Length: 176
Image (cartoon, helix red, strand yellow):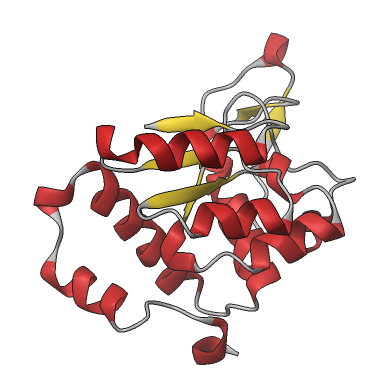
């Protein structure tokens, strides 16, 4: 289940905690909350925190995201919104750029200028890795993919992915 928590951190955490028995877990979509709200969410079993471009706007946002364990995070684009703009603090970590054109001049294989596209989830991954100090971006992507499988497809989990997650997954210390 994807859940919104916009300007409602305390109420959200209380409602989810009281009703968690009704669903197996969820994702706090497009998280832009405080460190305290992050910590409250992390105290709720099987609640993941969804990160997209809106989550990566300010230096404070990057510090808050840096404090989310990779094993409790998912990444998203929220396409066509919430892209990482040149004015965002997270832009410093973006390495992947896709050619784009205005929608009136659309060409297959190009993104639409000014619109967040699903392929840009790679940029979110790059910023998350950067603000967490993780050099092994592929390892981080595997951990995040495993999180998705663990929540939404628990019967299809790969045993080796489980072992990686149980051993701590990918951390900044392992990759600095």
